[in-house]
Length: 640
Image (cartoon, rainbow, N blue to C red; front, top):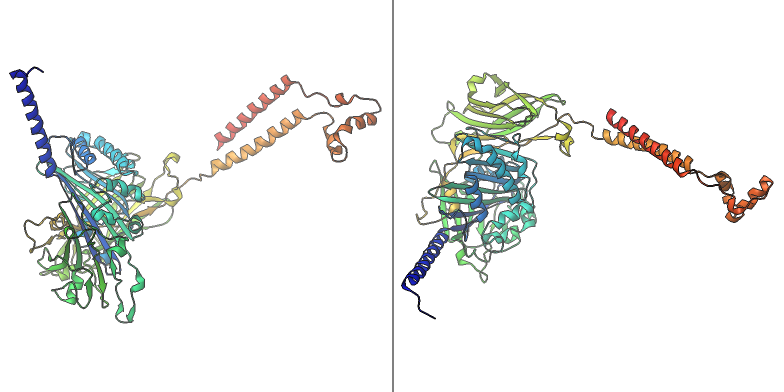
């Protein structure tokens, strides 16, 4: 071979150098992608166990447009860059969070307790004119990605644009909910495919389907934030409330109650942990002991004391402080880097003595219910029951006030009269101006958009109960707009109640600055205490869907009798009745001879039966009968 010329050699070297630079840049970008996995276990006062799975995938800001990824899900990167999403949160929930028993003041319940069904909200970095069209594309994309009916939120009657009741924004936020959406493994499997190890290794290997879906509460969430400085950060979380085996609990004394059921990870999930996900930057498990247990067992709670004992000694104990500088709980940390197939981890808790405690509730327990009867009109009532939380706060008095922000979305067929708002405090009627500081109403439009109500209320701290009542009329739907189970009723999404004066953030003073824990970072954020109400089921006037069936059945019966009789008359042969009378007693071959003898003359047996009617005349009569039948059918259907 002839040697390369200097110019050609220079071009080859330049190409190789360019490839090396691109490879190094790709490797550097891939090295900055991070994935972490964490699990929080907590015993609950009502003899249940809470498990909160948290996974974070982060991608630095790059100009690669989501083409090359090693840990970060490519589908999410393309979705964010294509639709210009700033924030997004999607949740699938089955069951209802028990705020009275499981707590409503901690960051876990504030951020992860979701309404039943599907809830989706997103903020777009787009002009106002393009947001609604982009929202429709987003719902279709997520519907295919998670195998759900999220595409039903594309209709303008299914989503709203709250201003400050949900989250303060500049009008670029869209919110929608599907209360009747069922949650199953078809939604969990695509959610797991977004994780690097899926459910094959690490903490995700505990997600045994029968154990997860037999719980009292199940909520899986996907939350992402996108910015030019941090890139894209995706938080995957799964919160379940499970019931441990109750057979081990024994009755000690009538005054002491029962022992809490002892449990472990293998008992709850039917599996042990055999190590971490190899690509995860950190893998940790936390066991949280709440303040109610700390008060009775002492502030310095060890992992083995007179009330309970952990099955495995923790690697570290962290004290958790709330925003009032009061210790709220203790966290026992387990680093999965220290465990493998030869040394599996099976964290559990064994109770020694009966212990009764309670979780911190929200300032008010919010409930919503329907009033009235009939299919014409009714009322929606929103009640607040005080939990006397202000008495436990330092420096509070009965002269103070508590703010509450309420967001409610009403379908267009629930025509709310916003001027009919009535407020009752401790059973006494109050003027609206005494309690209502701010209100924003977006009236509904028939078959175009739902109604939205945002209210800022101010209650006195001494108040024990309050009730807000709104009247509404029930609209009429077209027959094509009714769902298959219309007699079940129509759902009104849950109302959101938030308390701006109360913060559920936590602080961990003993944590090293180099300590990486996205779960605890979320607990440190300033999260406003909020809670969701129940979903309302409103019965509407429903037509009798069986009437078309009755008309069709009756019409077909009449036509069958008419056409059957007509064809029977057209196809009947001469002497057929005589043959039927003698068919049972006389052989068919002797029938012509007997008829000839009865008539007094000889007849050839081959001519004993006359030929049928003329084919031309028969066809004409059949056509006339069919035309008559079609006319009768159209007549009955038009009248029905």
